[in-house]
Image 1: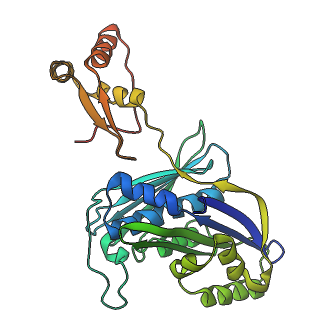
Image 2: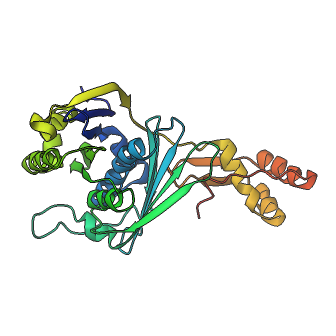
Image 3: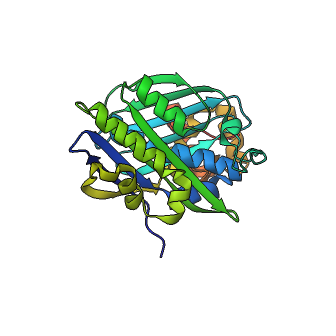
Length: 308
């Protein structure tokens, strides 16, 4: 039976290191199915979704906080966005889900770096009932794990090691997940050198995911630094906040003539770009929306707009 997607949190070296591990296989498969992603686009978005989950747990622990990664590269993918919530839900999309490239001739692996390209990484944190906080860094490779580790070191001033992997076979995501190690205040140079050594011995996270559970990988990554798991495992899910009500509200941005045309044509389809769910808004709902405008009511749907 397939293991459920989950996040494990812990410390090592007597509290000198933070250690997080996530198994995201099922949610990456769901993202692939929803957006009809190519192989390499699946690897790119899968890494970003896993990375958003891991970063969301360390940059802000408020239970209702959200973190959004926006990767704007000049590669064929055209950029991607991933958003995680601290309740374990995540969602995301790419601009060109069908984009694909040949395998890297050097090692026969998916060429995520070239598909993403060079550009910017923007991280936005949103607490409930507070203004969003945004910071950005340049993409260093487009491989996503390196880019997020660079962000943590450069923007957050936290020495970090991040590994992300997605393994596909025959059109299916067989394994996906990630590992994050961070230096905590007071960490000694000896501890950091030991952690670096253990990580160098670990090898490819994708290969490890094919052989071991995320807990076993975390233990290997810590070696003799003594991993201590804290709290309960957090279940992870691909989950969107869209709804028919919000889809209907998106139509508020259209003029009266356009709404009348939608009514005459029997309604309007609205597509959520986060999860690719299609909503059919009935003529009656559009008519009520138009009447509310006449009466002075102005609804707003700020998260998902209609997709052309």
